[in-house]
Image (cartoon, rainbow, N blue to C red; front, side, top):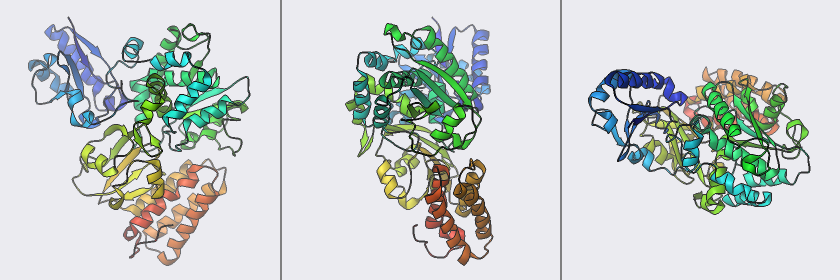
Length: 517
């Protein structure tokens, strides 16, 4: 009987040598006459341990990591295929402290299964949500999502059920489902992990959405920088069509839903839903004026649901276990779980899925283990390059949309980038302005010109020129960007800039704490 060995196909694991490790294990097994079955699974999200090799034993899956090709011969010598002791042995994977403390709903299968195996997916509770959805009315599908309290996981946190209900009630012969997979925020990788590690959960979620609102066509708008995700999604979609989970007659129900992947060219602004739709229509990615909202007049002028990967991937468990089950996780108006991504200067980078409510401090130290440099953590940026910088005094803020908003911060996509006390926050503020300048679509003046002037003002501040004039000018520019920009790219650039100025004035050459804007 063959022994099952798991080596991740996740692109982050591959960048750390997973393909080479998989090849070395296959060659060493053949050389020694050991019968193994090599499975390329998704990543468990513990990236400081990648490549993480797992072996199926009678006790459960035993983890070894981080493994490099040079370790493989020694692992075989130690009998790792039977779970033998070795310097890289970590014990049972699911008993690892980092992993054991999590509440994995959306990520329940990721790391356990072969991503492109439909058999694996169905054997691990896959397509149970769709089966239930096929027996419900459209209104009851939408009600389950509404009752769950699911809100958009892409950043805006808009209630998913309300968006779906709007599209359901919009009269049209054609409606669309769009998955916004243009994951462009720094420090974020949860969307990529889903698409590479469990693509069928996204396909199932989009199919349920299509049934709920009477949309027969779906598009996954994927950034071109994700070639591994494109390959895996494409293979999974082909299998779903072949097995009757997509197409003209889903599982004999008479219902139709078609799905395809479209590649975006890498413009950050195309993560904004209206710019994304312009790109899907073959046009330049420019932001549209709203109203009308996409739910009323979206892709090709038709009612359109636009949701993030994590939002759609959370739908199957809701339809499987019920809205109340999902709602029981979290706090306040932030229900369910959030996949938090730890990156930057952090000892244990990776993904943590937990119900809303734990604090930044718990994430940074209980899970992340503090800074990788061993120096004090000075600031964290939450919510991507347009997210605010939080000082240590705000590390006890719970992960909750409203709690973050009360601090004039955003939780966004759940990405957390960590900086130790060697960082210069004025330079980080300049980076934010420069990012906006480069990525602006150019349609509105505050964003196009304001960010350009902002870089110039930041250069003067960093060089200590006319601070008494330039600090107020910087605030005025941020006010114009905040209140005059057409979309969140310009409208949110003041968040990192002003938070850096307000919390770290000394880095701007200001002696006293600046007052909040």
